[in-house]
Image 1: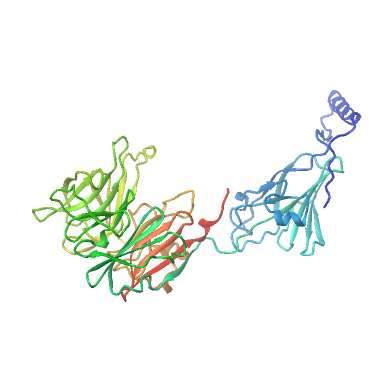
Image 2: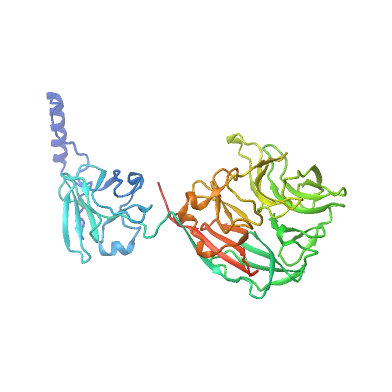
Length: 491
């Protein structure tokens, strides 16, 4: 389609226009409808938007439109309409939206005509709308809609193809799927499992019924189908996979002999030598330094010579450890969720970081459902009303909006949870069943989840990975993804 642009007009036309304007002003004609045009050949759109219409979708007016004057955003489309621009919404309307009878808002200079032309799939003109007479436009039944502005000179024109993007899949749902029914088919009778990460690599430790511990790794690339063959790395007397925790490019683990060990590759493990006579029970994660403090600290549970359990801390796994208060009777020693560490946020009045764990087994073997939180000085217990007593579950700080990371925490099923997913919107202070308020996120009935001690998500695509130990003692891998987090949105 040819576009004619006129860049220069006779000088006398501008002079006449200016004289007319001056005369009107001198005569004091306040009722004049005369339009003063400063650019006769301007046929471009300045802004483009939709007004609210809940019958199309909620929040229709909030969807921003991009004006691509040169059509660079879709070369294939422009090849069919040479010279046109493109106006489009980069954040697509929700699935099922029908963009009909939409009231359009536009700003531009002073065109002599503003028309919408509707074409079928064969580029035949089907209908047209004069925007100066009617501001509601139906975009739904036509293959292509073109907006044409004719400048004040009535010669210069500019065409824009209007693309109203609508999602083709439901965005507000987590789509779950089984990636592997038996992740490590060579291993039989897996009785303990923990998976952690260093950088972009998953490291799995699995203990089997014959007192062996096995290691495997895989790059965090969906669908996680490139796991290395499991390699035996020791016995259960030297490694307890349930205590696996990664920090500072190291995998850390406690042995059943109470020794603290570390590895940089998952296969070769070294005993931490600078722990003195301390015997370790479990690791409690990283306490980020408080506002104004000198350094972070690692937290752990140790076993004293008096037969009691104590909290301990160090600035590094191989730095001197300081033993603190005795662990209270209701505090879990094993089976709690992998610790989540949250940094201090001074601008919100939170000058200290937090560590969160949930569930687990106490010294007396009692199963708990409480969430425990440490502020760097003491631990506080948040008793749960909706969460059953359980152990060997996992928690991730997920979200429903990429602009608000960590606002929706998800808990995978543990022993005692009947395969049910839970969520928290207050960092584990309270937990609720996911299906109760986010039914479209919790469709895992066909997964048959049992005990899932490890759960992670890839921050690049917000894909969730759940590692499960099923009733047959096989390791299964389930994947889920909140679809709308993968959409590019600009609002």
